[in-house]
Amino acid sequence: MEQDFLPINGTDYVEFYVGNAKQSALYYQYAFGYELIAYAGPETGVKDRASYVLKQDKIRLVLTTALQAEHPIAEHVKTHGDGVKVLALWVDDARKSFEETTKRGAKAYQEPTVLQDEHGEVVISGIHTYGETVHLFVERSNYSGIFLPGYVPRQSTYKPEPIGLKYIDHCVGNVGWGEMNTWVEFYEKVMGFNLLITFDDKDISTDYTALMSKVVSNGNGFIKFPINEPAEGKKKSQIEEYIDFYQGAGVQHLAIATDDIIHTVSELRRRGVEFLEVPNTYYDDLLDRVGSIDEDLQPLKDLNILVDRDDEGYLLQIFTKPVQDRPTVFYEIIQRKGAKSFGKGNFKALFEAIEREQELRGNL
Image 1: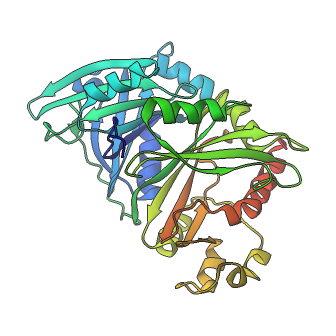
Image 2: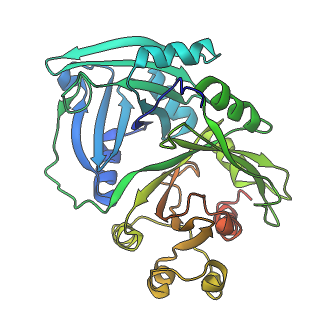
Image 3: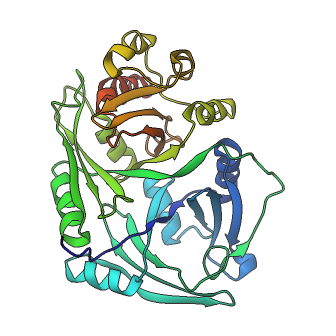
């Protein structure tokens, strides 16, 4: 077996550039049950931005906002709306990760940098990926602080109950026409990922829209990145709509794992999170399609949760509507019962649901 030249321990954090981090942080605490754990901003000596770090189980989100109109972060938000800037990967050696990927053709974003405070040191390096998205390599074995040097512990007086979100299962990127294979090759060549699965427009087209998708995964399978590109359809596809409003390639959605999707989705709905709706007819022959499942059908139907089976088991999944006004970034909630796949059997029902939303927005 070939030596993995880029061992990754998991996702370290995901950083969003947003218009108003203070308000976004409250939304994620209230609606998604995240806990505020750290902060950096003017009060901590960072003069140009404010960042809030939110945590639930193994997930860390960082919400960052610029404090000046001409700041690059403000430019990013102006162009893309609220969106993912950084997919940070937890590694044992940030210098080697940088060296191995840049010598294979990655464009450098950040040379290896040592950040220090009284809790030790963190080494960070970074490379560019699709659009304006970047991967940071974070080496934190010599650090005991709350998040990173420069951040201070911060708690909110509001203490939401966590809702069972566990870790990031996969993270999906949308790229432009004809760019999917370029980026799949980037992950294979530059980062040593393997091609896991391919969907073409025959697998996942509806009457109106089509897309193509390939899933790449790192050696241990902890990091999975599906990459989508639009395909020719009768009308504008959801990938095109995303690219129009995001003004380029970017992260389309984060899929977050739970061990109890009924509880998680009940809580999200109770707290006002909106989901795509599939018609009730989806459930009429569900058990014929997927076989026996542990869950009762009624709560799945009530919550509009989808089910799909592969050779290794089944999965339950549901997708939020976009979490900002531009129809760009959204979330998937997923519970795996052995299945390793991505819900191919649900694509048609799902895309028809997305198209109904696109039509309401006048973007189909």
